[in-house]
Amino acid sequence: MDDGFATIHPTRPRLPMELSVSVFTDVLSPLAAFLPAGDAEPAAPAAEKLPSEYDPWPTSWLNPKNRIDSLAPAERPTWRIDGAHLDGQRFFAVPTFALGRPPLRVDLHLAPSEEWPRPLRDVLMPEAALYARRSTIPSLPLSQYLVRALDHWASCIPDFQEAYLSLPFGSRILVAHVAAHLDETEIHLIPVYEVEQELLGISFLIGQWGDRIFGAGVPGMLDWANLAFVRQIAETISLVHIPSLHGDAEFVFKSLTRDTRHMYHELKVLLSLEAHPNIISHPLYVVEKRCRFGGRKSVCGFILEYFPLGTLQDRLSSPVPASLSQRVRWGKQVAEALVHVASQRGEGWFYPDLKPDNIMLRPSERNGRETDAVLLDFEQRGGWFGWSPPEVLCVEYMEILASSLPRGAARKEARDLLLAHIPNWRRQPREAEYRDAVGGFGQAWLALSQRDTGAGLDRAQVFLLGKLLWCIFEGQPTVRCGMDHELLRDVDPAGPAFPEFRRTPQDIRSLIRRCTMGARAWQGARRAVAVIAGRLVLYPGGHEEEGKELTATEVVRETSRRWWREEVAAAKDTLRQLVTRRPGYPSSEESQIRGLISQRPRLVDVLEELRRIEATGVAGPGHWGGTM
Image (cartoon, rainbow, N blue to C red):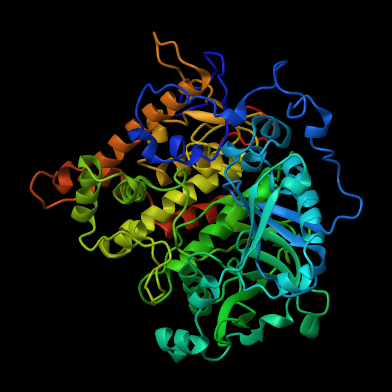
């Protein structure tokens, strides 16, 4: 590896910490920097008592009658698990009678696994839903248990099918209590009317956007009742048929059941964006549903093209590497798509969530052995920490602290820094009412779009493109340089991390470095922990506190806490450098981060360089499979 980035090697034994929902605040959030230091592991609740010879036999976990009968797949299941949300507490469950019917988006929610009896947690392994690959979630022990529990529960409810199909869109099933015996498992069917109440009618949207959005060439309206559900691919993505219009052809139905304003914003963006071969096409239909509360018709989603080849992330996870020419082609196509977005007339045209799982692949018309990249997901919310440029990341961190810390000096400092950088900043309510917004609702990116005549916004997107190019040319599905949700689904945590180079040709390495100027990873910053074999461990090369007798959990928490303190301190320094012409803040000439940002190329420059490389070939080593 070159560029002065030291190779990572384990220097101490890896110490494990059990995964749980607390990982999102204790490990994967800047809030971890403010957790009390040196706290002992919490005492195990009574439910976690291990079996012993002193337990009464009727209630002992050693008694076979207190154990789960079977976790083998049911012979004739009446339910199916399609996947799970990143938090591991929300599963995409559907009864088989709902297949081929309009998608109701009724998800299964679980009580926190920390509340379950310890022996059940050991058997069902709920933490696996946090790190398992999407394709393996239906076969997890917990998924098999849930299928059996739902089978038993639904069979005991008279006219269950009628009750289920009459639910409002976005309702939920709650598993309030998990037990070894299915008849002791507590499950509730919960109608949720708020989602349908928040959905907006087409006339309201036209009033917000103007008639120009619904002019020539935009999709027609489609009634939700015409959709036939196939399976749930992700939280917002359902695979459907439209039998009355397209037979067995498969399409994507995009819908949100939380914070629906982002869905409406993406719909507006896709309807407004001029067509490009490397950007998802305009929605084929806008889907309306007659709401059960009030009987009005509202927009509940839209129909998009389906890409059966999957995502670029799936392809980069494959053991069979793509050719060098194919990788150059992907990089050039994504750059072309970003330049096209930036060239649109008006304000608010940028793409802030560039990463391999937001890029779909389809067969190339030029060469059947190659694939083309297609950019999707235009909600403009922003991305994960590991991908954000420092000028955006510092705002994202401060927003979390200013919104979630208890009242006090730390929260006030974060808020004051935000207001100095974004004078009109305010805490965003989670379910805010939709109103038309230029550039969406991500305040960190909007701050860039409203200053520097677009140069800062352009170079922030170049930063994302540089990290994507690293993934493409290193053959890695993730950058492995942030403490965020991506850490949980990293299938090879011991693999190379940005900006370590092994396979990338020399001239592309240079381009990536210029694109990502300002990244703390160039200064040696790297993840503090990783997930290996379902447990949180110190990232290879990490160190625990010297001279302290700490438990495994305390070591990981303390390491994460120290990592986040350094991150938050760096973010505050970056934000102060971005704020100029204020007493106590550095001038533009004294701002190191501004200097680094200005050294990044523009999007058009990166595209020109990739086109040159495609036409003339790469310089420097570039043989796949060898160490660079």
